[in-house]
Image (cartoon, rainbow, N blue to C red; front, side, top):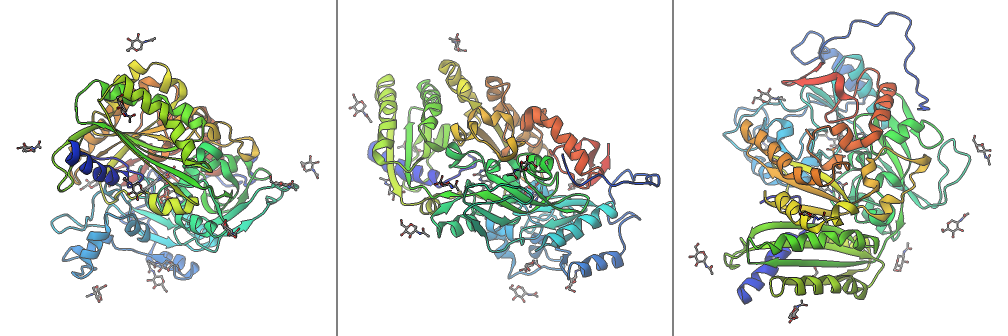
Length: 602
Ligand SMILES: Cc1cc2nc3c(=O)[nH]c(=O)nc-3n(C[C@H](O)[C@H](O)[C@H](O)COP(=O)(O)OP(=O)(O)OC[C@H]3O[C@@H](n4cnc5c(N)ncnc54)[C@H](O)[C@@H]3O)c2cc1C
Ligand SMILES: *[C@@H]1O[C@H](CO)[C@@H](O)[C@H](O)[C@H]1NC(C)=O
Ligand SMILES: *[C@@H]1O[C@H](CO)[C@@H](O)[C@H](O)[C@H]1NC(C)=O
Ligand SMILES: *[C@@H]1O[C@H](CO)[C@@H](O)[C@H](O)[C@H]1NC(C)=O
Ligand SMILES: *[C@@H]1O[C@H](CO)[C@@H](O)[C@H](O)[C@H]1NC(C)=O
Ligand SMILES: *[C@@H]1O[C@H](CO)[C@@H](O)[C@H](O)[C@H]1NC(C)=O
Ligand SMILES: *[C@@H]1O[C@H](CO)[C@@H](O)[C@H](O)[C@H]1NC(C)=O
Ligand SMILES: *[C@@H]1O[C@H](CO)[C@@H](O)[C@H](O)[C@H]1NC(C)=O
Ligand SMILES: *[C@@H]1O[C@H](CO)[C@@H](O)[C@H](O)[C@H]1NC(C)=O
Ligand SMILES: *[C@@H]1O[C@H](CO)[C@@H](O)[C@H](O)[C@H]1NC(C)=O
Ligand SMILES: *[C@@H]1O[C@H](CO)[C@@H](O)[C@H](O)[C@H]1NC(C)=O
Ligand SMILES: *[C@@H]1O[C@H](CO)[C@@H](O)[C@H](O)[C@H]1NC(C)=O
């Protein structure tokens, strides 16, 4: 059983079920460098510590000095559990082992990432596993200023070293990890958040009449939410407490508030960016417009490193929260996915009426709760909200739906319906932030679904969603809709996948697998692809949400960016002619490939 559970809904389900079962059963200003001498021959691969072109100890020491001693050579975090490793420590090992399943642990470490395969399972914190630094960066700049970032970027460019950028390390596609690299750890780009009642972007001759906040590039959701809560404001932000603006905003960023205001990338008014050529620039609708366009949806660690962002803020809404479960113990009944297709078919209309949130559906979920019996159920769980609304309005939305399900499939389903209200977004969030686990080996796939796909043919959809969820659990996040369709990003647009502009639902499927098992890893990716295939067929012209997607999504260039892709590549070539930033699957990465643990020209 596996899924990206965004809330503690599953535990709520299990509690509810236990009672139920026991009771009843460019205009880009930074120009490419002008060069008069012929270019030196390009090395075929990036340098690694074993090659002659790797910088000398003295060179690294100079980088360290220039950054004020902020260069780290971190051991793999799991090394404390391996006798023989320099940092072996029997007292610390159990702390690392218990921290491993938490987001907090990985975000606080200079090199750790959430999903083991991205560090190549190379030092898991259990004795018996191998331990080497092989899957981790070699050096790290612990940056606290844009200048530190620039020094790291310049060094990597000059010395032909693979460059990585890590903030929280939460990336599902492994884009914040790289072997044999110099990593810029942007997590400590933190400072007091600066709020605005109106904003004049740098070099613009007008003022934007909106409240806004300026946050450093390492800022995390919880920091934004808590600081803004003091002002009764909030931002379009994500569910994970330690997700950072760096990867989230540059990837698009969906939110409970998106149905109302648009994606996170749509809220951005200005960015400070360290470019791959080492310039510290401001990008907004009046200068560096191409970079501004690309950095809002074009992906992280591709066009530059975000050191500060200014985005709109909104009055914090009061939240009406619904936890709703529709299940049956009659596993295998054809009604189950007919019901699910019907409920998901209501999402466009519900979304237009302001509903937002998350849903999870499954053909069979066994109830592992102690004392919960051995019942297995099938159906759907919803964790959804209305903003600035009433319990009555929530009830009115669902009454006809419950009525329809109950009369179409009489006495087939059990309804567990629980509405509560929260005075502010932050009050809601403190209960409903994403509590899922980290420290696993996992892949996710994504599909964006529009109204037509969700409503055109419910008979077909029953089969589509049945096949989609047959591998365990499917999700349908109602995180797009009107606000995303009607968004008016500054400067006339941004690079977000055009499929978002028609979507209501971002559907995901997740598969976990055992570490250090090459066939299991390949099979997991195959499974993700296999279970998403029915959704791909259902919405062939749609796309996928890059930040929560299959890293080897077929035709990822267009699935993640649609027809924005070609413009994005042109901007990538203009801002990063030497491919200083490289990740996969990332815009314009086609000239290089990873061979073993080396990055080489194609
Ligand atoms: C618990 C959890 C909940 C989530 N909830 C949501 C959600 O509600 N909505 C949503 O849309 N997504 C959500 N996500 C997905 C999230 O958007 C991605 O995981 C995203 O990549 C995280 O960005 P990060 O900067 O925190 O992570 P990292 O792994 O550190 O970075 C991700 C990517 O961005 C790059 N990057 C990071 N910082 C910078 C920077 N300053 N400048 C340039 N590049 C940078 C990295 O190199 C990497 O390519 C969630 C993820 C988790 C783990
Ligand atoms: C960088 O310098 C600091 C302080 O001078 C030192 O503690 C640290 O070990 C150095 N880093 C590396 C990688 O040598
Ligand atoms: C091991 O870790 C503990 C707790 O952090 C620390 O107090 C102790 O000094 C460490 N031991 C060694 C040998 O480094
Ligand atoms: C990184 O820098 C921050 C801010 O100065 C500091 O608090 C932290 O201890 C540093 N981390 C490491 C591993 O040196
Ligand atoms: C603002 O700048 C634009 C473009 O440079 C110019 O066309 C416009 O007249 C200016 N407006 C004001 C009020 O100065
Ligand atoms: C700014 O917007 C607010 C709210 O929409 C409005 O009341 C106010 O008049 C606007 N101010 C200006 C200067 O346009
Ligand atoms: C926030 O809202 C509360 C409750 O409505 C109010 O008492 C408080 O003054 C507000 N704070 C600010 C900074 O507006
Ligand atoms: C639970 O499962 C056990 C073993 O499979 C079985 O013997 C028992 O009858 C089941 N109980 C119920 C209530 O289904
Ligand atoms: C479902 O229908 C039955 C029979 O008409 C009725 O008794 C029951 O209250 C209904 N349940 C819900 C949740 O509406
Ligand atoms: C309903 O939800 C609230 C808030 O999450 C919770 O405290 C309460 O126990 C739930 N009630 C039921 C019957 O599950
Ligand atoms: C809906 O899909 C079903 C199953 O694929 C198909 O048999 C039926 O003809 C479709 N209905 C319409 C109106 O297209
Ligand atoms: C991962 O580790 C294996 C050895 O366990 C090695 O053969 C392989 O090249 C590594 N892959 C990468 C991408 O570093």
